Every structure is written in C-alpha cells, then in structure tokens.
Image 1 (cartoon, rainbow, N blue to C red):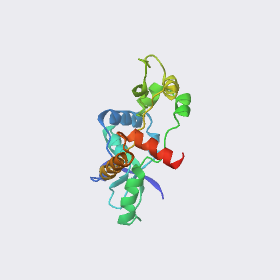
Image 2: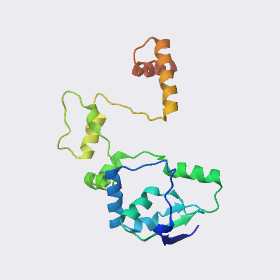
Image 3: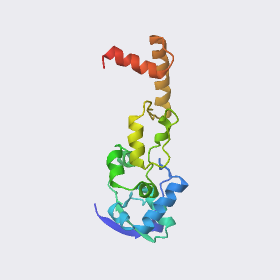
Image 4: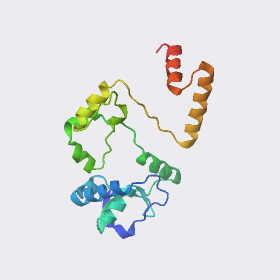
Length: 193
C-alpha cells in the first residue's frame, strides 16, 4: 500500500466512526499535529475507495482544525464491506495495557498529560488519610502499589454488563454472600486459586 498526499477537502469524515474524542483531548491532538506534523506521515489516515476515513478520524479532524490543506493517506480500496467494518473496529481498539513503571521512568508526567495520555488516578485507594499531594507520578504509583486497599475496574458493553451483573447476583445467592468481592473470594476458594 502506498502513502499519498491528497487535499483534505477531498476526504470525508466517517459518519459511523465508533470513537469520539473530547474537547481537551482534541485540543491536545491539534497541538500535537501542529507541532509534529510528521506524525501524520508516519501514521497516515486510512480512507476507503470513496475517500471516507476508516482509520484516523480524530487525526483527520485535528488536521482540519490545524489548517492543513493536504494530508498523507493510505487508500484501502481493496477491502470488502465486511473487511472495512472489521478494520474500523480493530483500528479503534486498544489491545494492550501501559507498563506504568516504564512509562513514568521514561517520560515526564506533564509531558504525557500534554500529549493526551490519561494517567491513572491513584488517589482512590488511600487509607488512613494518606495523601499524594506533591508526589510525582512514579511515587504515586509506588504508594498505590503498597496501599492496603486497591480497586479493580472492569469495562463491558451494555449487554455484557447486564449479563455479568445477573451472574454476580446468582452467585451471591448461591454462596449466600452480600457483595461481588465476596463472590470472587468464594470462587477463588472453590477453584483452590
């Protein structure tokens, strides 16, 4: 596949783009593209045979807002409709997790925030009126990891979330416990984990 530059007004935003970007993040992306336009050459916008964006909608919108008149694109004209739909989702999925130790040892916290990276909020897990005030991100991570109480967040689509809640409710009845934490502990006991 070849990268080519085309006029930005020849490109159409995908009306069915499943990802959004909020105002502050969009401002950061616009700033990033303005300060580092080479990023678009390294990671061009992907368009279909009708010049509709199927990968990089947010970069496309930020490039427009930054006043660029042309941008690098890859034309994915050979995709079937099913492949096109699959590409849109897979291109927008976040498959991995950050290694926060490495990230915070290598990059500056303010720089990361300026680039639009959401750093974890470690303050939810404070005990005994502890505070993270005045600590850098790496120190916050260390303090979080040694805290007595930690939280886990699981993210599901609406349908799956409903199924998970129903399952947890069933398990609460089965084990005669009052909350989901106790369900998990009971399951661990049953499985000898």
